[in-house]
Amino acid sequence: MAPSTMSEDAQGHFDLKSMIFSLVTPFMLKAVVLLGIPEMISKAGPLSLKQIVSRLSNVKNFQPDLLERILQFLVHKRALSEKIDEKDGETYYGLTPISKWLAEEHHLLLLCTHEYPMAAFQKVNEAVLDGGHAYEMANKSRVWEHDPGHGDEYVKLLNDAMVAWSSVTISLVLEHYDGFKDVKKLVDVGGGLGMCMGKIVEKYPHIEGVNFDLPHTVSSAPAFPGVAHVGGNMFESVPSADALLIKSVIINFSDEDCLKMLANCYKALPRGGKLIVIELIYSKEGPFEMDLDMIMIGFTDGGKTRRFEEHKALLENSGFGNVSLVAVPSKEQVIEAYKL
Image (cartoon, rainbow, N blue to C red; front, side, top):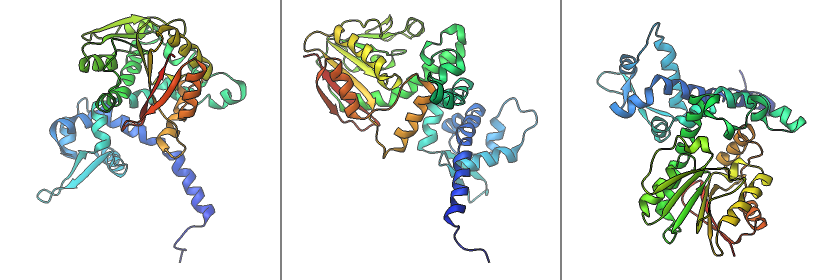
């Protein structure tokens, strides 16, 4: 009879395989997204396999057993729920707190499984040995420097993914942080399509809002009441205001680049002006934070997750003072700093 427990070496052997095979999870999520299944369930409620099949389009040689295996895998991963109906005996698949967001905001998933980021991760070993940045090595462009000529669909996907990344956090910040209430003019530095600034001005309509990002980014930004879109380069200059917002920007750049950008922010503020930073704070105890740090290696040119002390050092080395952490119930936190 085989032993009831494996040896440590044998367990390590299978643990390694599990780590290797874990790469399939985002691609199975991508498969159901492209099939439209989360959206189907979001609209109709829990569906059986037969009901899902009846809603699929462009079916040529359907493989129901293949789809059922994928659905069962995602149940195991808690991305779908299942319940067997006592009357008809059918298994009905529903959404979970994970797939609820997948139905609404799948852009980040499609971005991370796109061929450009995938190619970048093939170059990480070269970046370690030879210097440089994996994404640029693989794609001949930095991630934020793709212009529409590089592919309209990819640039749109990148912008939509950043909106999806920020939408929940900015709502939580506005619910639990009141540091915008006395601001007259606010510039969102690296604000992308302007969604965050739009939400801020919606809550505080007295604010004159400016969404500042690269020209090719703001050229496709939608209109928001009370928000002006301004194109430019934050490493060259930043529009002046009595307060600046930087959200999910510092994480994307090296210390050297951050110091350049923060120096321009310092110049743009009057004495007593406030800088509001919204960033993830790194912790070794947080698996999400460590996973994201590895994503930064593949996506960015020197970007990384940072501890609060590292953020504080960057801000103080750029001239800011009175740096403080304002906790909100989110993975990303608020850091305030002032031009003294």
